Image (cartoon, rainbow, N blue to C red; front, side):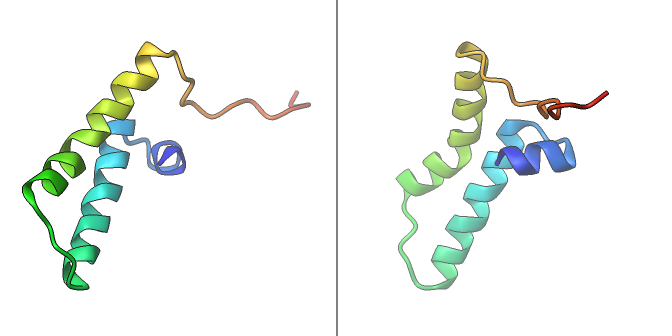
Length: 69
């Protein structure tokens, strides 16, 4: 999730949401059940993670490399 955020410049919300939607889609294609709760979770987890990161002040930017001049 953070690798996608850093690599493509997407927000954490979009990166996490994209991962969840892809996983739910693959699960459904493989024959797994997709209920209302699964869809709600997949659509809301990205916003929840991004809000949690902001509240806890988790740095999501690329850290500086050690020894870089």
